[in-house]
Every structure is written in C-alpha cells, then in structure tokens.
Image (cartoon, rainbow, N blue to C red; front, side):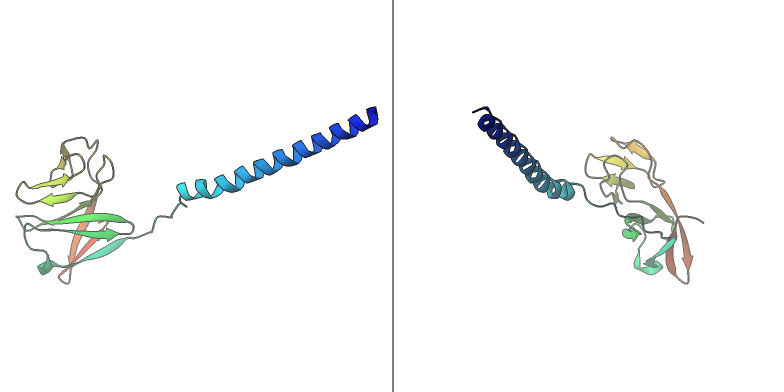
Length: 149
C-alpha cells in the first residue's frame, strides 16, 4: 500500500511541475509581446551636419517655417530686421512643437502656454531652459541651417 501512495505522490509532484512550468511558459509567451510593444526599439540619431530650408525669397519677413534637422524639428524665423534665426522647435518642457507668433514676436508652445523670445530664451510659462540654437547661412540665395558655424 505504501508503494502505491509513493507512486501517487510522485505522479502528483510530476504533474504539479508540468502544470507550473506550462503556466509560467504561458505567462511569458503572453507578456513578452505586450512588453515588446510598449517599449519600442531605440532609434539611432541621424547624423546631420546641415540642411537646406529653401530659398530666401520663399520665407517672407515676419514668417516662420519648420524644417527637419535629422529627426528633430527646427523653426526658422525671418525677423523684421531681415535676419534669419534658427532654433530647436521642440519645447524644453514636454517636447511639444513650438510655433512663431508674429503679432507678439514670440515663439509659443501651445501645450502649456510657454513663451520664448526670438533668441530662444524662455520668458514665461513652464519651460525650464532655452531652446537650442542653430546657425543660419545664406549660400546662392538658399537658407542653410547647421549646428556649427
């Protein structure tokens, strides 16, 4: 009789291990795709030295334009004095895209009403630091934006 009980216990232990392993495998197979979807793969930064922002006559005085600098947006402003300014178009508060308000002469973030002056310095709202500056040069009537002068 004792042999019969031992065999039963061995079978029961074996089945517990099989079911526990199967359950853990099921949890792993179910959770892995969910976690993989929620954590997107890291994209490498595109190495860009300069970009063309179009022709000088396309951007009228007082207007602005968004251009891509690699994976990041840059805002180019044609100021009233005729100069061009290029700044990061990503707000330093929550990474929203900023826009130029010509009537107020400010760069404005619509997310939380953050404002920057034309030099990128934060002047009101929650942005903690200024916008990154880019260099603008004119070559053959074309606006060239670069990180370095």
